[in-house]
Length: 274
Image (cartoon, rainbow, N blue to C red; front, top):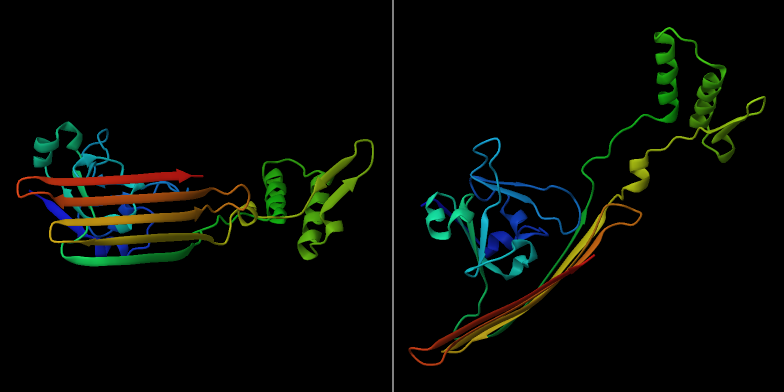
């Protein structure tokens, strides 16, 4: 059938927080869209595209032979990913494989290999792709006054005072020019300073760091692989920003007891805290 395969080298070369993000542009027929920038948020996957207005869904994930959640995996622990894209996959895995199957194989040690220790570290800084450009206070007040005139109404004295006060603040943005007060039969008070809330709330950059340490090896009849991973990611807001700490652990052991008796065990640990 229609099968695509991605090796570990292709996955780890991309500095992605989620292993599926590393497949962007590497697999024909696979659409990957990021729903939000929240730390730990996984992408939306669509294999072979949408075939109707009402039917769409994520492909089924099989991790080392068992259904699992790809978002908890450490990309450095993945050996390969195979994608089954045709209808024949449904004959093997049932109705859940309607939108394709992703077969994920995690790493194992190699026989006749000396103990090998590997450490991977990556650091990146994410920046907002765009901040909305909004009108300043003076331009907004001017547009409001002009709208009043164009609709056949008269601009109030207070609106004209606001326009002059906002122009004064734009020319000289000091604390004493940031507000206007009118005393009379009905006292009026208003702030006239201008600000872009997106500039005040959204950070210029946010850090992301990943650490992975592993040891692997084997003898003539056994092999082993052990890894520990840590990832720290922060969101884009300056106040009460989202933070995520993710911990991964994987242990894989294969042993050939006799010619007819073999033992294979894989234990994984995944935890995330915000």
